[in-house]
Image 1 (cartoon, rainbow, N blue to C red):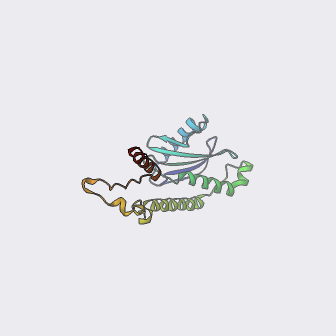
Image 2: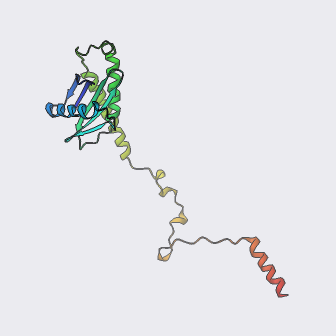
Image 3: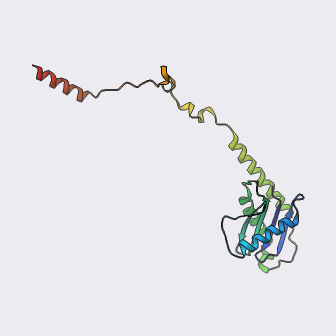
Length: 185
């Protein structure tokens, strides 16, 4: 669950944000300021994950319009859908406000709450579906046990597997027998 989400210009102007009711605004703002100061302004790309206290921040930079999309959540959570969600929000935000962004009209209202909520629900549902798919047990045919033969499962006394009979090569054994028989005559 995301605590805070913001669309920010590279210079630090907040265009739009979403705040979870349980999260304190000051804590999120401090974390985003630290992200801008320590990562964006120093042009450190890295993994896209920045940890500030108990908060984890994932960012996605849009170079065309110099926008920064930042998702803030608790560091102890491992949200697998955040990267895809950031890309989806970036695409939707750019499509919706392309004209305003091209003209540099950053001081106008950006009403993005409905689209944000819809994209977040889709991302969370897809993430749950992937987790449920991973939790399903394998079917018998997918297991390694289905591939075993009866001979491989038979055990003899002492826990040893039955030995396979060794086949002699016919050509080598007959020559030695013939040589032995010829020498004894």
